[in-house]
Length: 212
Image (cartoon, helix red, strand yellow):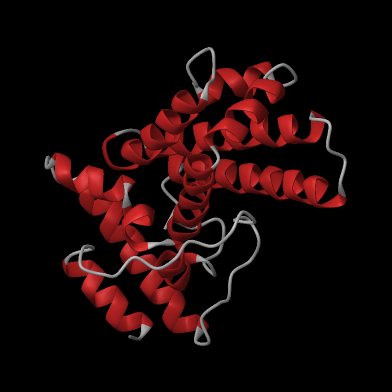
């Protein structure tokens, strides 16, 4: 199925696709891109707008729940086909980073909670912005990232992006401070900091009405 066919099907109903296998633990590494960048960008923007802006016009709770569970139901490789190559400072690029973040937290909730708990001692302002319940256990961090995706549809999108950025930064700092100084851990923490900066930038663009 081509990217255009995927986009057309998702535009009508995001249900109905098989669930592809999720990638491994290195969720913030680059995934293969689309051979047609122009078509990919067009589809990425179209689906992002349908999912987020469209949900805001609906009072159907099922629509919001579907937005939260999109990666669970269809797998990150389907989302990657649409969004992985989108510029970071677009709605599609922001969605891709949010779904990566949520998938990692749900697959590693204890580790996410540990890293957040460690990082918040060094980034108290970001901890407050992130809004994770204290103490930040596995259930709490999972609930927080789900709340972010629900907020994309029914809350202030710029605030949700800023909260996601703060969460990612706290986790990255915690990861850097935990007793594991391997080069991969350092690179992983650096990627998360970059993700935080990109989500912050997207939030600023949304606040000014320029996030497309």
